[in-house]
Image (cartoon, rainbow, N blue to C red; front, side, top):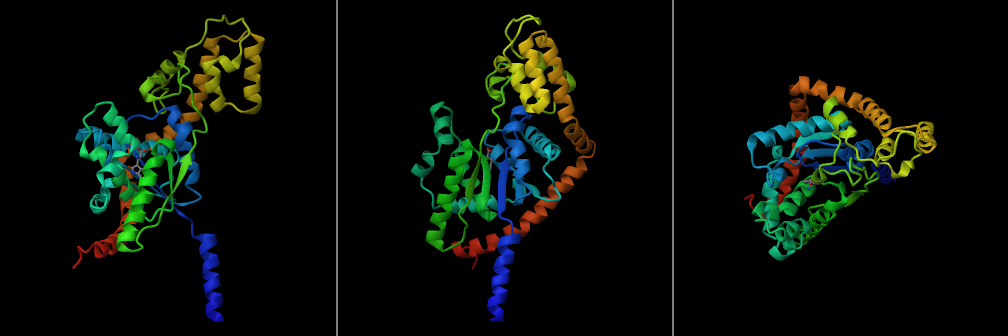
Length: 340
Ligand code: TRP
């Protein structure tokens, strides 16, 4: 009876207190813009509290596109500072660098040996590259398997990603099932959390804000860069005096990310009443952006001025992540048969 009670208590405790494990990777590729923040990073930051969260910088994956050591090094540091500045909390989560767990490439090899070429040929990332008649490297072809290794080595329960990465999570699930069937129960089957684009952030030309359209407003740009982007938002040629429909205005659409309730209503009214020129609306937007990113900028400055802090955070993350990995790899090596 006592044991049964203890067991029940343990289960209850487990359900209440053991948070699910969340893992995601971020590619260290270039500068962030407002669209990245409102479309994805913000949700990421909001999720970190509810899970036992690990986030890593996917530097191995980045080598499929960045083949210059200095640029990659620079990008890794920058993405770490960007995400810390945006609110990833290194005291609560484990933030590490993928290459500090080189065992993922070992695990990817075991997976490669049980994965067929036609299975990987179905990956949209590969098909896209192939269609564009690019030379596809073995690394790019194998991208989903390395990603499966990232996820499965960490016993992740959930993996938040954008819609474009959903298929990669399916690869991870299929690979886990295949390995488990061959070698016995080893890996958890991870679930995706598909981060909807809560806000399709319009760029300065009204199309979706995206690096490839060159229509972005940088998140951590200088005041001048941000001003220049805001001033080049495309509008029609209505005079200040004319009445305007706010919903048709690219400036207004971006105001909506920053203004809420009364403030937004007032601006809307000023659009409709006439008397508000686009220049004034842009000046207001510029101020809104600057005050919104002010605190994040300050945080980023702190890290820039003391980069050793960032290295220390990544070092702590590595130590934490390695604990899980060592245990997991020794189980895997035994099953595969390389441990004699
Ligand atoms: N492919 C992901 C992206 O481009 C990055 C990534 C690498 C990742 N490994 C991962 C994401 C593991 C989630 C889990 O965004």
